[in-house]
Image (cartoon, rainbow, N blue to C red; front, side, top):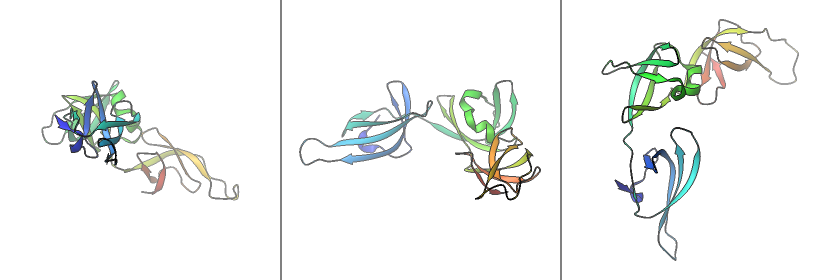
Length: 185
């Protein structure tokens, strides 16, 4: 148990049976009345962001979240098989937990997986990954007024908008948070 005075960004709280990550907090001490803590919380499972205000000194339940470095091995049915780089355990991570990260996940790639009491919560990928373009149409020169883009399918099956000069077989750098093209790999 901690109090709202101990809050820090990135902390995970257990509120009403749900896990929430503290995105930001502000301790407010008005001239009149008691102090309070204004927070912006993100639901770990759904991703929903809410604003919540606590009275200063209120006790909050801090959840124990264990983040472990793991290596992606392969996919088995609906599950993704990872290997803990320290203990060599191979947990099965459900497709729902991996979510959109599956579009940027290659075998033998490392990722950080957060667990709460043995249950996988979410996956953190590196900010950018290098993927090979497997399929894209040739870009037509002069068919635009500014820098144009076209869809390209990468080796994981994801479709990324790339500049017209990208050809199949090229490696590109992709932002894992937004799915944007960042440059050639």
